[in-house]
Image 1: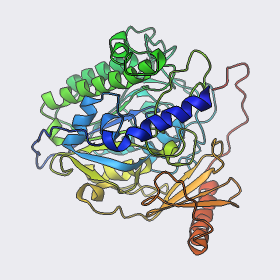
Image 2: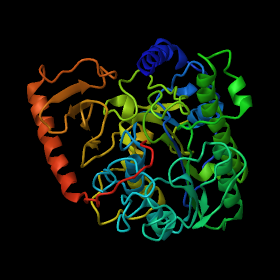
Image 3: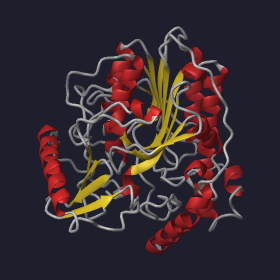
Amino acid sequence: MARSDTIRRRAFCRAFWLAALAVGLTVCPIRTVAGEKPNILVILCDDLGYGDLGCFGHPVIESPHLDRLASQGLRLTSCYAAAPVCSPARAGLITGRTPNRAGVYDWIPDGSPMHLRQHELSVASIMKDAGYHTCHVGKWHLNGKFNHPEQPQPGDHGFEYWFSTQNNALLTHANPVNFARNGKAVGPLQGFSSTLIVDEAIRWLDERDSARPFCLFVWFHSPHEVIATAEAYVERYLNRSAGRKQAEYFGNVTQMDEEVGRLLGAVDTAETGDNTFVFFTSDNGPETLNRYGPNSSRSYGVPGPLRGMKLHMYEGGIRVPGIVRWPGHARPGSTSDEPISGVDVLPTLCEIAGADLPARPRLDGASFLPALSGKSVDRSVPLYWQYDRALSHPKVALRDGDWKLLADAELKTFELYNLRDDVAEAKNLAKQEPKRTQRLAEKLRKLHADVKRDGPTWPKWSRKKKKAK
């Protein structure tokens, strides 16, 4: 069932891809405030596929608030997560480093020794030192011992205020029981996680010292399994889907979109929107169907025209929706195909805030602000991904310009694609382009070895009788 459903949903998205991109969007101009440090808002979804929004081509899912956000700014069509799975993607975003350097190799189970180490300099710490109020709300997933003194918590990585969970909202998105606020367990809550997260963010925005700029990270659980969606959103799709489970997924995305709209409305109403840099994206590609068992079978995200999904090194696993709104800098209704990645967030926010880049440790990202004006990002390190447990045969990838090279775990077999001409990665050009393949393979080997030298070895650990993810 999983395989046939996956094939059908890929065909479903690709059949409507080009037509859906013709959606009409209303531009709402916003003035720019000069002479003030910009506020920063980073919104991250969980398992949202490249093709899951109206402004990225989905023919059914309604995402009016994110469509409007795209109309107010820049739609990034070659936006990448730092990894095809959650914890490493978040580590890359926080540190500006390939996640394997930071020792975050895979998703982090509850109780695991794996964590984002204290000496890793986070973007929140830099923003805090630059005079920003810092806040994290939502899914953290950068340690195994959450809210425990044995490992660094969000507050130890520069977030002055945090309202977070270790991994997913438990037991589902509805009425979660596992949030902690600034080191204290909150206990059972009533409502859906997206709403609770935005409620907390808005309350923090209202209560903070408005004389200082803010740096707010809002990391949703949606649309990760175990999905729970308010019935009103499910009903919108019962007659436009393949059944109730798909309607629950579609509705979950729309419910998240509604909360994004509420959050942006609060920012704009407070007259800070015209001086706020907003970046919206996802932590990896869409989930494969039925990976979590019978209680979690609502994963109907789509990768658009891309090959692969979450846990794959092909584009569908790592290329994700990206939107930037920054009045006076990102032209309303514009699009950029310049490749950017989660590892670029730290150097980008440093440039926005006028903060110095950290002298150590080594960064892999680069500021993507040039892309806002149609220019190329100046990279000293090519975009690089490594996930040793990838479901795809390739476990390592490198993108250099329009070219993407993929390799197996031993770096012995290679696939080469020109993404400008072949975004679906359908035509392997490795044999037709032997010199280019060899040149890129040498770059990949050097970078792979460099990353391996940096990464720590964690103690052996067993989840004992905990259910495998």
